[in-house]
Image 1 (cartoon, one colour):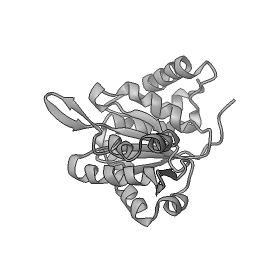
Image 2 (cartoon, helix red, strand yellow; image 1 turned 180 degrees about the horizontal axis):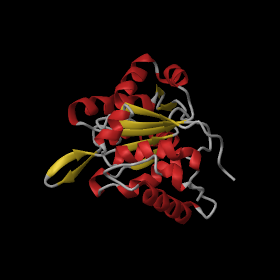
Image 3 (cartoon, one colour; image 1 turned 30 degrees about the vertical axis):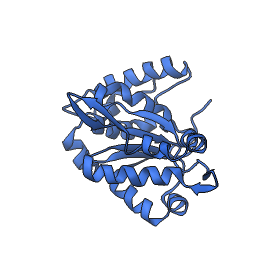
Image 4 (spheres, one colour; image 1 turned 120 degrees about the vertical axis):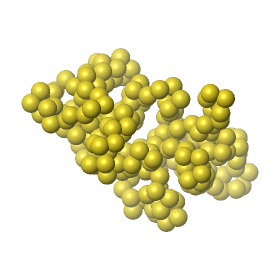
Length: 217
């Protein structure tokens, strides 16, 4: 792993040891995705912020304008590693806080086959039982904006927009957290989902932007 120990000294937290987390991500990534997987030094600053979020380091999050109430929206070019990292960060979480990573395209095609019950499946019915209570499940919507608008028995529905609106309501009433990844910029998301959804997304997400290029071999 391309890690500079001097540079790592700039990343200090009372909740976690950054270099240990980087080593874990490197090893877990190679186990899950192959030996070509690599944590890049250029991403250390962003990874530190994301780890501070998942470890609930309020001091670091406050310094970086990250709200622990909101989810994460990871943006960046194709191939910069957003999806793989969101899959790996689940290893740091307690069982009740672990999230599934679901492709928006898969959800759209699921809607085409099963209809409007799919919207409820990923929003109003997206709960789990924990200590005799129903608590919201966290969901990561992968590749936000790449799904197609799907028709079900002639009804054209922007499935992901409806899920986002439902999850926004549950975010305000039940503290339901949503994460997402996207290759699109904010104006493209607004053109796709409309101003109303984009406005809700600002309330639901902390924006984390990757500026690095395609890292795929």
